[in-house]
Image 1 (cartoon, rainbow, N blue to C red):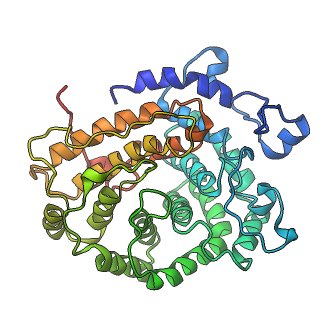
Image 2: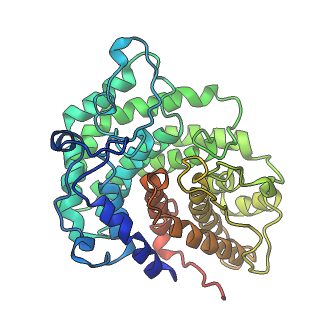
Image 3: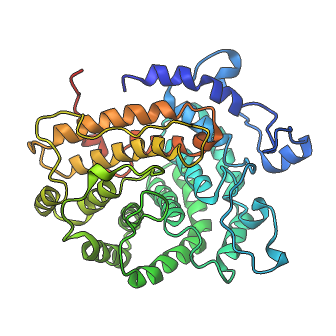
Length: 409
């Protein structure tokens, strides 16, 4: 993108900070060497910033951010039900794989980010470091700890649906890598086999929940159902689980087939990182045949222009990047961008709405990727995952055949 060089330059201080050998304990004081050795794996590959060089491309910056995050235990915000004093424990002892990056779901998609870049050969000079990091966390012992956490009474709704959707995105990624050839495919098969028991628990949990869900969850944050349903379907198609795909697709049609005139002008809400309207459309393009989707979209979002302009959808504005809730709006720009591209990908090439959809996607993507360079952990611990999802067109089938239209400046 046009702004890539600017982002690489802006991210340099953040990357340098990420590569530092001393981390904060969340209270301003550095952790002891013993604490750091226990919780925060030191990077083993050279950080280009340390030698006065900028990362070679933006994916290096994203990978460095995730590597500095996935084993960083503090600060930490846990969603944890206490049934007794025995449930009082540090995050690393509660969920031994996904305890970093401030919360469980961010740790999951931080691992997904690394898996995606590694599996797609996007940062080959960091492959050894990434594989070492993943291999150190994707162990049978640590995954057994995750399984034990999930199976404890009172946690049936833990990370539902957002974190569960990202976990299935992670195993879908591993599954697709495992279908290939070579050492990465063999390694992915090992990790995937280790995750299979936890994956089965999560799929069963979702399958039990979906029939009980009477209404869609139309929020712009973690509980939104449309975003999660889209990732559920992607996992089902990647793994060939036809019954799970049928379950999610039928519920999606039940919830949204008759939706009309989505109030896009009411978005974004003040703490959104997902667009309720656009994520619904991004879900339905996965479920409806192309001709039906095009007709449905006309009723659902009649305000999409046909003149190629981008200003029909204003970007979200963040006025305090240190505020963990307000910074969500940096994420809404990224997720809007990938939803807009996804919607456009399902329309005929000559559909007059495509240029405006892709023009708005470019504007939102530009704004969103600029935010990834934030030095504030409130945003940096998760925004790189959203940017990676967008840049690699993860949710679009045959994305390498989808050409992003250039927008006249």
